[in-house]
Amino acid sequence: MSDFVSRRGFLAGSVAALALTGVPACANAPSQSLRPALRPAGGLAATVPAADALVSKAQLGGEVVYALADADTGQMLEARQPQRGLPPASVVKALTAIYALDALGPSHRFETRLIATGPVQNGILSGDLVLAGGGDPMLDTNALAEMAAKLKTAGVREVRGRFLVWGGALPYARAIDAEQPEHVGYNPAVSGLSLNFNRVHFEWKRNGQGYGITMDARSDRYRPDVRVARMSIVARELPVYTYADTQGVDQWTVAQSALGKGGARWLPVRRPDIYAGEVFRTFAGAHGIRLPAEGAARSLPGGTVLVRQQSLPLPEILRDMLRYSTNLTAEMVGLAATLAKGGQPGSLAASANAMNAWAASALGLSSPSLVDHSGLGDQSRLAAADMVAALVRARRQGMLPDLLRAYPLKDEKGRKTDAHQVKVNAKTGTLNFVSGLAGYMARDNGRPLAFAIFAADAKRRDGIPRAERERPAGAQGWNRRAKALQQDLIERWGTLYSA
Image (cartoon, rainbow, N blue to C red; front, side, top):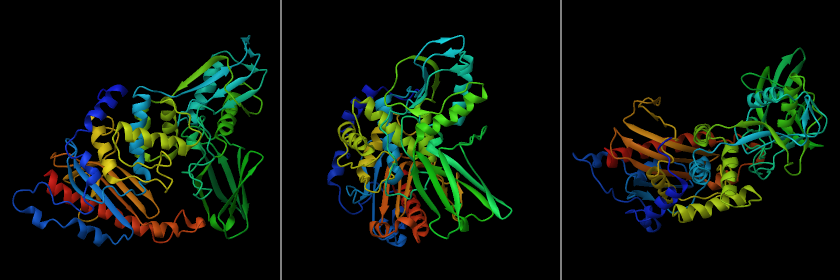
């Protein structure tokens, strides 16, 4: 990670980057495809399909926009309505990664603590024990098990006071996007104390005429049962799931007709702090430390830190976020970045607005309008030219290329291959009838390019009933055509501009 620069250096470099040839002109880019700035030798340009023809062939309806620039100079090479803002979906996580690195720095680690509010004498804590979250988005069951073992090593055998949990390091949100179905695991609550991406594992198996079910906080090493989330099987056809908050407990029901012989899925948790507290209490008990039922602390109590559990370095967290497109990680690091910059966001939208202002000021973006840090909310809008400008600047500062995963293209038989002559490192983004791809590309180590492609059919998306938003009819085929268009455009650009 030695390529990362200081936050001050990043901002200074970003201001200087505004003078890049071609980047400021993005604001006045033509609405249709530009004539290629460079043509390869041998007349290859005549054999390359026109960009508009590729868009027409995809039959996506709605809108398709894109921008392509030289990744070194920022010179715009080809564009289609580059200033037209469309939902970026998870592509926005790449912008969030730049924001977090600028605000927090590459050496930042999040810290989860166990705090004693009173003295520990002869193994007895005469006071409260507090599990205090520090905004670690990757805290998992294994980490809580380690913290319980460290508490025993610290000499604690008994707690005479309360067991409290504190998630106030970040603002609480019941869900990332209120418009999503209640049961989807990618839309959990947000809190400064997180566990297992704030999801609980629901598993069912046929057992005679009925089913055996479990609700647990499983990891690769442990499977502690939880009671903060409970499931009941109901004899019905639809809906498949229902949810109710029953005195702070996530009470689920599932339609028996949908269960089959067995299966499993992750369900979102709405009280992450209590969830983490219950799991920690289980592990503490396994070490002979009995704790009372967890309660939520309204503010962070003072006291002595008995155990510290540090996260991975921020770049590793961001690399995982970009690879697996974890919405919760994006929201938590985005909130942490806003707080580090002196903001006091009361909501995800307020924090996203702070990131919009930063992107306009530090990166020179013209019109970012994001409602969250993950791209889950479909009201976010981002222009392709703005995304490309951010990519060019981030590459100059060494803040993003190493974090983006390789994006394999397909061969003539439709199989993904690493042997394709065009190499791409990019972030994908997918919502129903929304598809995006943005990153860096080069053909056979040729000229490096930065690109962004956004497509959206807002009319079809808006017409999806809430109950069908997880797998609406037609969305899968639309997404395949969108991805095929992305590859067609990338291959065109590789031939025309990177060879």
